[in-house]
Length: 287
Image (cartoon, rainbow, N blue to C red; front, side, top):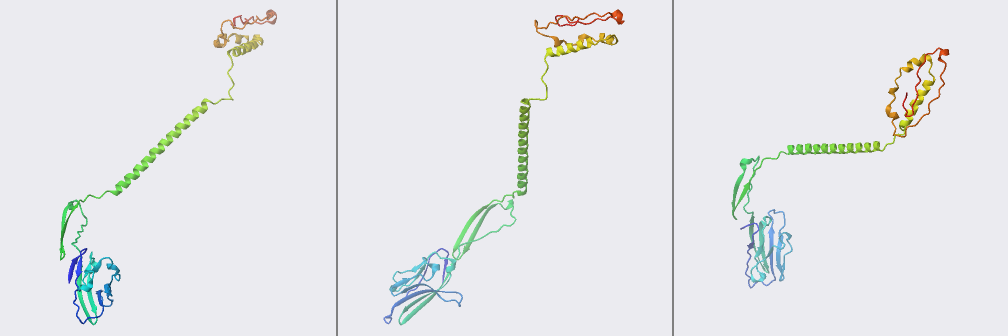
């Protein structure tokens, strides 16, 4: 029996001595006997008619070989490299040379290296620290050191809520800024339109001279239609109420009016009361 660690190399011995009676061809065969008796033996490697055949077992392709390149020397040992757990089993070496046959069985056990696992549930900050692990079995001993640092869990709900609130606040500020910009743009546009707007429904202002002439003309009309019955009310009208600004003109540009020639009626015959009729002087004032 052989016990080896995973990843190591093992040599399964198989030596023989030929007798003078053995005259037939030499055949050497290595097979793997499965643990289940219902399964057939699996040929691993074979030497026959001075040739080596090692393509029968794909699981060991490239990992097995005869220890002696010339098995005819009496050494048919087998080397298996880079052992795996699946290599565990019973191996049999068969040497055939007519009329003799020899065989030998070898039990191989491949052990895993020192392995261990520590599971901590509901770990808190009190579990923080350095942990040392020591593992040992028939193939050796191994140890390791692990540094553990337990941090409190992150409040993901608070982070998500804060992100949502921040996003909504940012969108609100952005919407407010856009609204202010649009409002400012509309105000500027309205001011520009009002500034250049031409009101067609408003008549142009009258000149001062036209206003004065219209006022004087209306007074003349009212004087011409005076009668003794309404003369008394007319004499009470103060002529000083005529806006002086309507009669202001630059020096030398005041129009001159010829004195009106009104025939004095015979008041004694008409029985009317004598009144004073206003007249306009050369400078435009009423006397």
